[in-house]
Image (cartoon, rainbow over all chains, first blue to last red; front, side, top):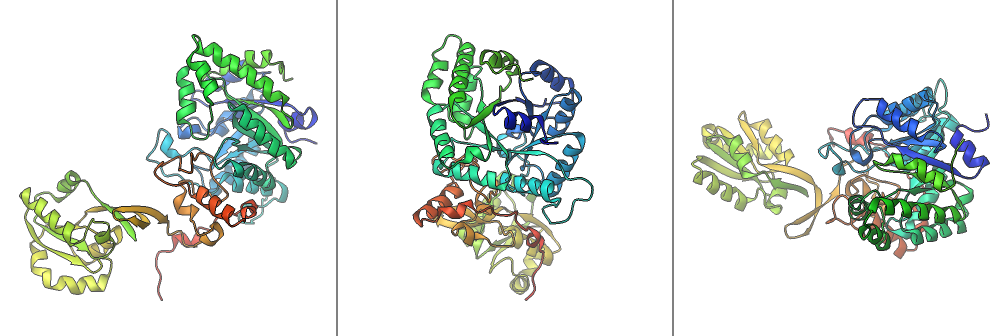
Length: 304
Length: 211
């Protein structure tokens, strides 16, 4: 088998992929995942299942992936370092591979103080770069972090990481991306892009170092559903950069939802033109139902 | 320095009941933190007496975490200690336990121990050490991301800091901004490309040391 996953296949053969985020429910009802899966079938090449994102307890990422696999959809299992030590993380990598997960995206995780259990103890035994390297070594060398050998089956997964082109100190963020590539990341999903100028200059630097040839970069897009959400993204979510011009368009609009959708379409159009971009990652927080029309109007549908 | 903060008064009053109380302070860290020096011990005595809780005696140990020295210093207070129902200790978590070891009394923790830290200026302290067992500051230009980054990130910043301030606590500098600035000044930014392996935590479970 040439490619480990459909996502790897699409990225390698077609050079442009679409991924969409499916946030697991705050409950055990599997139908919540199934409904989203059904709605988004054909809209993306793979579906990210988040791992207790923003440190709010939800159905586990692996369980969400299992449900999608049961529907014939390909998941990208997100793994955060916040809640598990290296023993549990490696165990879950083996378990995920066993149930058919073929893409894993490694993140360090939002700090627990921002979630619904601020009194919990963060683990952070590893950071995302170390997790990437560990999974790569498990897959390619058949060894755990301790150098102990894997006995029955290396986890054959396509390894991903996140990147934030808008973070401080900005000079460091391309180095940081390179470090993730050296560690073993094969695809990158970026923080949602609102500040196009900053993103373009980050990509210029990425290309000047030839990094776009060494990793598939998938740009994040998040449609803003309301003024409240725009305010939250602009002022309260660490690492997100919503520039004033976009914020004001939402703020001054009579129909913020329509404006948010229009902004997303424009951003997708511009992002598609950037050299070195290999896809779009759509994170429609609490607004997954917008994804079908967004991909259709952007001309990136259908995905099969 | 072990940084402590006194527990809320109402909380302490609940734990102390009707007394009588013997108060123990510490001449070292708790004195510098203004949580358990002579001044704070006497202030606490005053407060308790105003609440009609009898204070049978007090002492400032030198320091509270020294077992044999505590035993020696407490000898001349045995009469007062006998009368006490509760012993309120205004020292760090370590000092409190040394008193529990010596006294067969209800020992009440008067402080919360927060961290190992630096005295930035009078009355201002900041975390500097997590007692992780293996000091790796040299690699990080003398700054410790294990203790100073809320996510203990060893391979660079999390991406959430704003203007060099930590996303979790805006009063605190992002330690990775400090590491970055230092490396930049020294023209050593290349060092950040090296992947730092997962930390060996085995020394952090060490429970005793004998010389």
